[in-house]
Image (cartoon, rainbow, N blue to C red; front, top):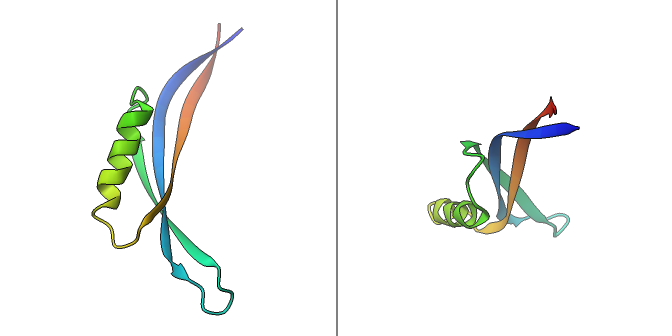
Length: 74
């Protein structure tokens, strides 16, 4: 049976950079924060994302977390 060994997380902030004048679609940019501790809670990550977004020029649209795990033989 395989065992998951958490390695880390990456936090990605999706930002509204405006509207494309030709298509009218929203332009989404992103900012990634790497080397996030794997034991960080969802609440802590969301608080961090909102704190960082408060320092940015563009408004926050979405927050994503990518977790990386190592699969080991169990």
